[in-house]
Length: 136
Image (cartoon, rainbow, N blue to C red; front, side, top):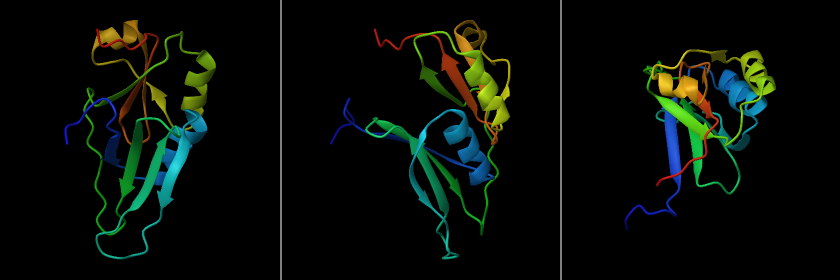
């Protein structure tokens, strides 16, 4: 079965602290918790936090294995870009900062021109773009 326009996308990555991640992504950005699971000590099972929008074709899965934690190692180009199609409200940037994020200059100046780049508690970057997504 090919991946087509109806395929759901899961972006998965490790997190040092799922509470801090939830604080940023849910309380800060306003995403919903789609699923949450706390590891019970069973080897190979991790704690999970899945956030996104109900009914959307994507979600972000954050994973923490308390028995063998992985340290996130994002680069400045590991971006999650959200196309808002309007100016980024200062109040949203301030709320994200209050919830564990920090505004950072983009590695690629394109994103400073067309949005705001923030770093989440695990060091990954979120770009809130003023542009509208177009694949043409």
